[in-house]
Image (cartoon, rainbow, N blue to C red; front, side, top):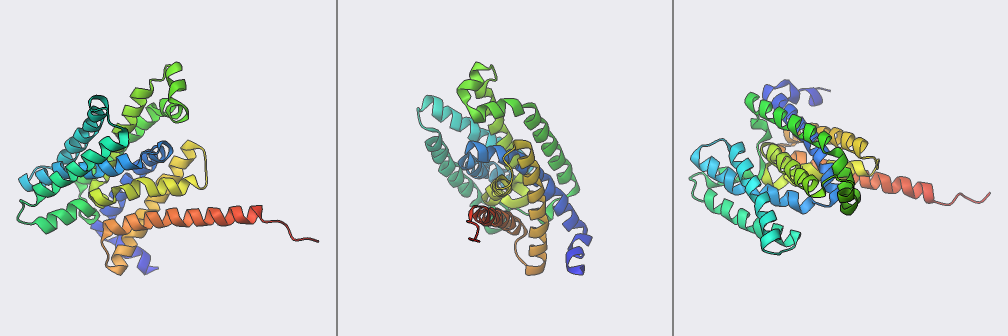
Length: 280
């Protein structure tokens, strides 16, 4: 079993696993709501909405998480402003800002002398470069996200069932939606270093999709999604170590593989249950 233990004997792989696991736990909780509410496009857009802030921080030498946070928040506010004042639909607002922020980010990166290196790190992440201070930041982000999700659980459930009923019950569906957008923003920003802006949606959605095949209760779905996300981090790091592949992309691929396998296993189980018994 040395093939399994050897990679995790190294400090930087251990930090990558712990940091990736923190991200996976946060994404498992938030991703469950994203799947339930059908907000996958928002997660994708926020992932690319970080690009200008991350690129500017990289070029100027500022902390990239600060740039990512400011850029993702600006993206969220911009979507809301286009909806209210531009009278555009939700997906149209996201689509316009998605392309604009992506283009702006590439333009900023193109002024860097190390364009290819910076672009690769921003798009695909560098989970193996997670440091001790990064773990503190990721731990704090995960704790904040979990506390916020717990505090907003009842309004989010009501919002998922029927926004009009939530309003009648005084559960403030608009505030619940804003909270959910904030949670998605936090998860996307926290996931940035692990898998980059291009692959963040894989870790946000795939474990939640896989978990949805086995349980319909929201808390148990969150727990299972978090566990599958942690397993995807471990599997991705092992794949990267032994196959020489990019670590962030490997983690995202394993997570999506879990979603595919879960769907196939659920389909096979349902097929067996519904098949007629042989005549006696």
